[in-house]
Length: 349
Image 1 (cartoon, helix red, strand yellow):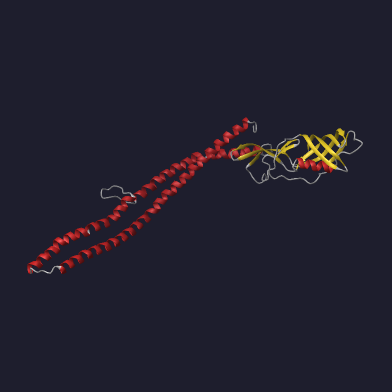
Image 2 (cartoon, rainbow, N blue to C red):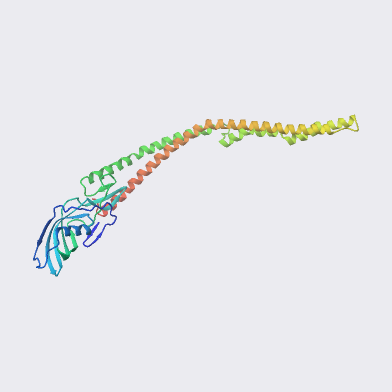
């Protein structure tokens, strides 16, 4: 709220509350009353004041002095008391996560004012009134803060408990800052735990024939090497070549030796059957071995999983502490920067 005579601005204003009651306003008129009329009534003054100041300020007592009168128009000077319908605050700065406010008006607390006003009309025709050149013995800024009682993120710089709350917050930050060495000690202890846990996780995969530590990939290859060796030993192409050399060709030769009109078809059929059956059996046994090795690998990985999770849990604890240290340092740096700025601006001492 900015109170500037006729013009009224409520920048960022929220929770405006209009007042309907006169609150026992005292109404006094001094000076010469012109012969043809009377000053505006109490209710007229109240209503116009309420309209001009959006119900935030209310007129408690007013004294009018006639300065000029011509026809149904008159100019008046006014003095008296006004008060606010709510506590009003203005923003004065930011301190870390806290908004610093100054209470500029206290609800129902009378404040002296002076103003000018013009009136036009008569009791019979009705009145139009305009206040201007308003000056009050209080700040011309302020707004209603609806959650001022429930939100602890506000600090009221001119409240009785401001210094106490400020010192409590600063003390809490210092306590957190002083906890950093202990937190860093925890990080070092976790580093040692993580090295040991990682070593156990790595050692789980075993060593190769040369005594070298294997990785997960090495262990995977070692398990599935059995299938590769089986497929190599039972290579169907090699079997067909060997079969042709050691079985088929000797059988054909023996057949022709017994008879020049050797009937080769049965020998060829047996060759085709034996070669195809070897391929079929090799495929089936290879598939069976693959399933067994896959199950073996799953079982092996399950045994290693708790070791990997142990490393992950330790690392998560470490990261959480490092983030906490970083948050503490950032909070202290921001507090220092904000307090220095507020002191330069004269908001706090």
